[in-house]
Each structure stands twice: as C-alpha cells, then as structure tokens.
Amino acid sequence: MVQKKKNKNYPIKQSILYNLKSKNKLATLLDLPLQDLKALQDDHFYSCFQVSNGREVQHPQDALYKIHKFVNKLLSRIELPDYLHSGRKKRSSITNAKNHLFSEYKTLTVDIEHFFPSTLSNKVFGFFFNCMNQSPDVANLLTNLLTYKGYIPTGSPVSMNLAFFANIKMFDELHRFANNRGCKMTVFVDDLAFTGKEVNANFLSHIETIITKHGLKIKTKKTKFFEAN
Image (tube, rainbow, N blue to C red; front, top):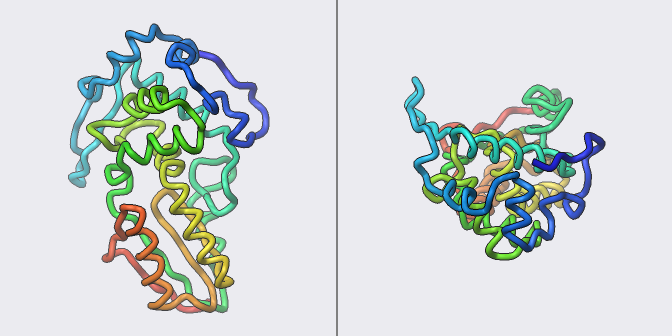
C-alpha cells in the first residue's frame, strides 16, 4: 500500500484519497487486485460478537482489516477542526473536558445515541463523493469496503475517523450555531459539550433539532447541565 510521508497534517484536497476517479487506481493504492477488492465487500469478512455490556461489535478480518487500518491512516492525516478532541495527537477526553472547567457559565453535555451504527452508508458515500470529490463508482466501492450491513462497524480501526467525516456537516453546523451565540463547543467522538451564557433549555432544543435533521438522535438519559464553576 502506498505510504504518505510522515509530516504535518494536510488539507483534505492534499489527501491521496481526494479526486480519486478510478477503481483500478484505488486497487493499486490498496495493493490488491480489483477483483479481490470487490470480493471483500461481502459482510462475511467481519467477526461479530457481543461484549459484556451487550454492545454488538463488528471487527473486520485479515485483508479487510488491513484496508480499514490503511484508510484510517490516510484519514488521520487530514486537518481537523479545533473543536474535535478525538482521533488526534495531544488531545484526549481530558483536554476536551478542560475546555469547560471553572467557567462562569453553564455547560451542557450531549451524547449521540448509537453513533457508529446510526451513521449509515449513504453518509459515508456522501463524504467520499462530495467532500473527497471521488467518482461515484470509487466512492461506492470504498463505502462498501468500510461499512457493515449499511452502517459503520463498531470494531474497526477506521470507525472513529470515518464517523466524524461522514457527519462533519452536522458537527460544523452545531459549531456554527454555538459560535454565533458566543458559546464554546468541543467534541470527543460522540460526546458534545457546550459552555456559554446562552446555554439553557432552548439552546438544547436547537442542538437536538440540528442533530435530528442529520438523521441522528441524542441519548436523553445522558444529557446534563452543569452549573457555572
């Protein structure tokens, strides 16, 4: 598989995945014959099991796992918005939380329900086709290789980055909404936090409306308001 130089993150248009118009070029990039790539679209190449909390895990196997790992490497090199704290160096759930500590305003935390399985293949295709400017056949093949039964698998190395990029329009819209109201927003995978003067029940209602518009739901039980300081 073609390796990118290990330097600083680059804009999306500099990604080797950007403007990919040929399935044969994709096959060359992934170092597999095109026929083998097409065969790997089958969901039988996943190991599926349940963990102790009842969560279903879908883990790609062998050659498919290598593809997921390689695509994740490429996605992880793309420049990310500053509000995102997951999937990047020197950021963590701790840096995410630190952005909201000891504020003079309230903080709202929101979880997205079933984030990976609720991110469907049409969103993944939309990312590759619209944001990555790939041809429909390349975007479709990549989507089929990276999704399981029409959604993002929970046990893949590419899942976290792919779910973010597949939902980037929603995250950016949420960030614009918060920013326009003088509020700070941070994201760690599917956990969102907002701090600011206008954070209240009405603010939450608007956040929920945006998330619902993009085909996802909030986990009501985990929605919390924290008082100032």
